[in-house]
Amino acid sequence: MSQESKGRKVLYTARVRTDGDRDGGVSRSDDGRLSVTHTSPGKAGTGTNPEQLLAAGWAACFQGAMGIAARQMKVTMPSGSAIDAEVDLMQGDDGYSLQARLNVSVPGLPRDTAMALIEAAHQTCPYSKSLRATVPTELKLV
Picture 1 (cartoon, rainbow, N blue to C red):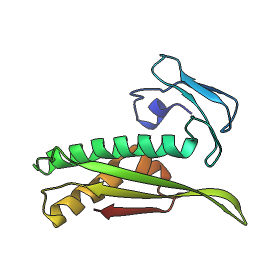
Picture 2: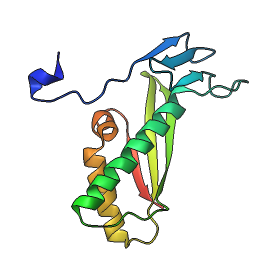
Picture 3: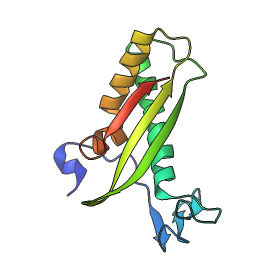
Picture 4: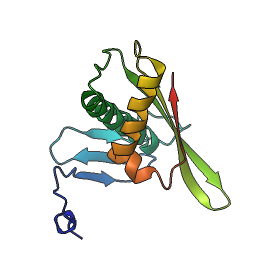
């Protein structure tokens, strides 16, 4: 279903082709900016894995959402802000699943202001919105 039909406009479409799987596969974007080899966690190799890619994308998007929230709240984001994202691959009786932790550092801001930015970002970040119902996520100010 087209997003335009729901009153939304597509701003960007990422196009990535993956040949193979998480153990030796290769992913490349159509614009040539991304080219990664995959290696399963715990196995020998120099590649990345889907959980690392999710953690990197989510953290970058979340930082952007915090910046938007800061501008709306008329707060200056500190230059040393950072997010340590952790994505766990889990296995249980129901198969594989994910859980995550976003450890957010916003040095120099009062705790209540920093937490307000984090909560606002979690409500607006597309990754957070998309994963909220299916990936248990802990947000932590560090």
